[in-house]
Image (cartoon, rainbow over the protein chains, first blue to last red):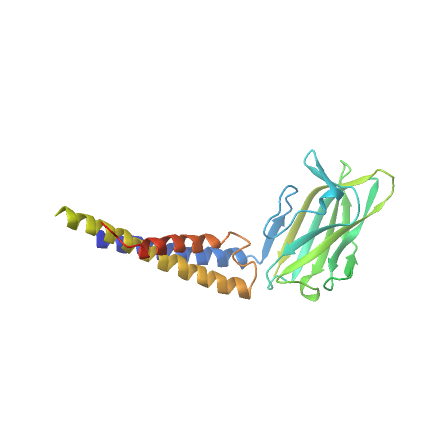
Length: 172
Length: 68
């Protein structure tokens, strides 16, 4: 009886391990070819870090306000994802969005390649949506981690740029 | 009779810890190799160090002698 129970438990564990492997493959190599990552303003995620340094940002009423430019974030993506579409929904309150830049060479030194949005649309509530496209394979990465920055231009002395959503879609 | 009963009980737990050790440690090794080749493959979703902790606990149970 106990031997049977042991065999049953070992079979269950092996099947769970195989299931875990299949789940991981399905998560990392999605059949539909893309992976969606949403920025969490409050905490770092394994794939996407918060915007930093913290002194340059402030979370207010569910929106993240950039007080000073630039702010950085790290994206960890697997090598088979070639393209990243970055969707940024924001409101300009004294700061204008210049673009998003990607790190091109290791530190020391400040090596970033600034890209302007491919398209910007404005909604009736004053929020704008900018779309950026990055070819990930052309840029520097350290163990699959790529660093980006959001650059803004100060228009008023005490202005900010409020971010509602930052969504990244990785494509194969 | 009671001695045999206890002995059997210990064997069951040791057998269980053997199975748990084998599965969790092999799983940890596979994930470690995959993670080394493709950083973020597993750690983007969960922390695989738990498999090492489980395998360590089970190997401690496995090697601890029964003094009863």
